[in-house]
View 1 (cartoon, helix red, strand yellow):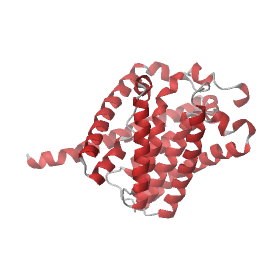
View 2 (spheres, rainbow, N blue to C red):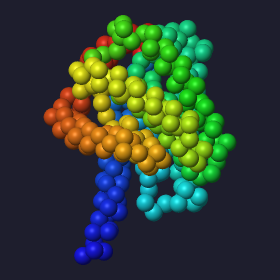
View 3 (tube, one colour):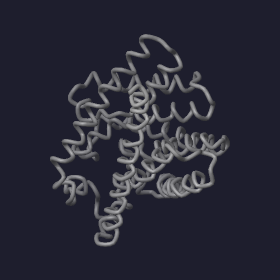
Length: 291
């Protein structure tokens, strides 16, 4: 009986990981069918200033699944092969997205920046963490610097443009959680690069915490935008500091994350019909010249 209780946490972790893997594979197959039967919509996503950022999402999910795989060692050949298979598209999208900000007149960051732009930053930081796990410190530093420099530029741009917000559909307000997801992911990435939750990791964690508190001051926006992005960061902080306040923060974020996760699942199921068709509110923001 005692042995069974000791195995429950690991069993639950395995079940959750395989459930996440099955969900990811199912979504990939569905998107493959979309590419075959609705290629015009996929092409518009690639050209849309908001939609292009979501092309990073499947590779972020795959990298996170790879890093949390229960039976795969970071130094194995299979791990390294899968890492480059998922990281290469991230770098390709970086070249496309960041390059057009430098070179295309109609695609300047000051015009195209929106909260979803931070998805690209998170993709680079997640890839940096994976590289650090394999011991590729230089590669990890390269991806980390690429992500954090662009996060700084995007954050400053959005900081100055948020009061208008006319080019960002109201239906996409939940992506405001990315404002504290990016520094939280950066904190975790630096923790793996440096090998300890040092001052830089703590600074990024506190920045994430400050942005989270800023959202708390706006309950309506918080309700639409909060997610579990600060959870893993707070766990690392609590393990490093070993303080009652840090433990309380970890408990609060864990509780909120579970509730929000269940809420998002229920809302997604309730709005599944809407998700299966093209959202006119999102695509109406695109001018004919951008399509």
